[in-house]
Image (cartoon, rainbow, N blue to C red; front, side, top):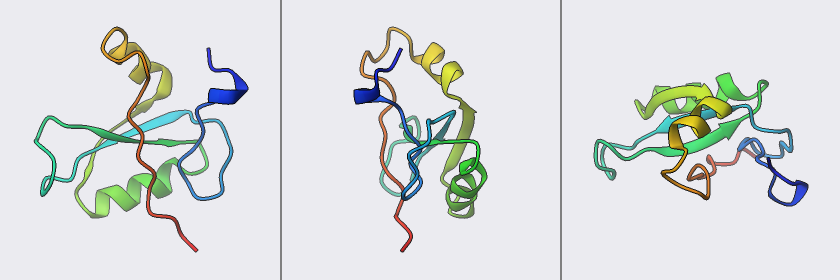
Length: 89
């Protein structure tokens, strides 16, 4: 379970809501085909972030955070590798 100090929050600019979704993506110009980077999203921002990635053909998978963590169990003790999306002004 996450403590307040390491809470998993949404990647959307300015959002401090708890993440519920993992958006797995890959930029084929710079990543190997099996590499997955992740953004985290709350319910409110899931669609917006997914559209941003999908329009660029980067989006590979959208799954509930609990499901992602179950898939990763034993693979990475630190949790999902998270990169923030470009921030809107």
